Figure 1 (cartoon, rainbow, N blue to C red):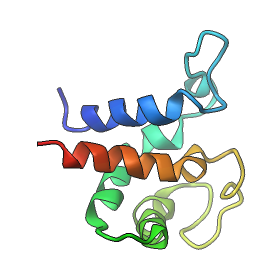
Figure 2: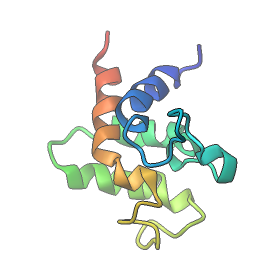
Figure 3: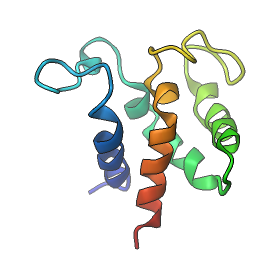
Figure 4: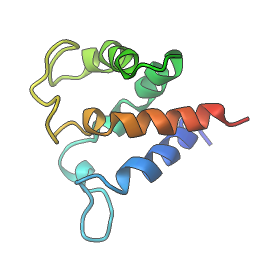
Amino acid sequence: MDRLSKYRAAITLSVCSICRKPDEDGVCDQTSREQCAIELYLDRIVEAVSRVHSGKYEDYVSALRETVCTHCGEGSGEYCDHRGTDVCMLDRYFPLIIEAVERVNAQP
């Protein structure tokens, strides 16, 4: 089991079940057209969330922009056409992603 598998499972449970991308069988069809930002940047997402120890959502967003968004080909850390739309699953579901990562981090 790779080190990200627990994070992937927790995020899948929290996010993928409500994401707009599943087909009629509930299987994600994102990979048939483009790779989901959550899967593509999972290691960076875990890194960003794990290094923040704050009660402020803005601190998590800053870490996300610095660690993930600056490496995405869709924009930059400061500006992105996809941010705030339903195109970027990472931005859309970031609060749920934070919760999932922190749940895994809290496990013994």
